[in-house]
Image (tube, rainbow, N blue to C red):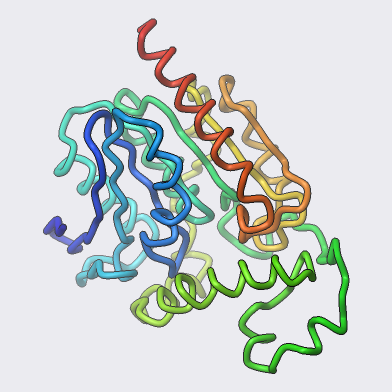
Length: 280
């Protein structure tokens, strides 16, 4: 499906009927990663209209001349929300940089947002200002890594769990979802990403997001060397009704390491949203 806006053409996929929930993917990724992780969960969760947009300049969405900064990306997302689900209350879920954007959408449309999920969220946009752990593999098997050809080894990057089943799952995600998304992302995405002044918002998101009282779920990886987990702890008090999970054996590719954990966390969050809405 396509949503034509002044500064972008937003491609999105839609599943189900009911209360809208919007999933925002990470930078230079596309909606297919979110579909792969969340649709199996919603097979047993009726009553939700799931919307999976591609961010401007990523996936099949087109960034027009007006998209130059993260503020512009946010403006396009707000226009998308207002066009596709006008005046309805809705729920947000964001992964990595999608979490950064989801927090901002929740600020700008706070009266309409019924819940927020942040998965391995980017809290601090500028790399140099993030608090991140050093990489240390939890399971080390140098012989296994040495058995991979150089192309495969480079594609996988730092491997947290050096075990055959984990490498197989990670490789499948990298080759079927991540690499195709990165390949088709517009050059503009890299331009914005490389400039801290354009990649971060022009406003103080941490200050504006304070006292979000709807049910929230924040999931961070204890071994996440991309965005870390400590920065997410710094915003926890802004979400008084948040479940906060710092998962061991979890890096930025989570839930590859522990795929059975995502569903119960999400289902509990959805139940809390339903309970809060009944009492409203």
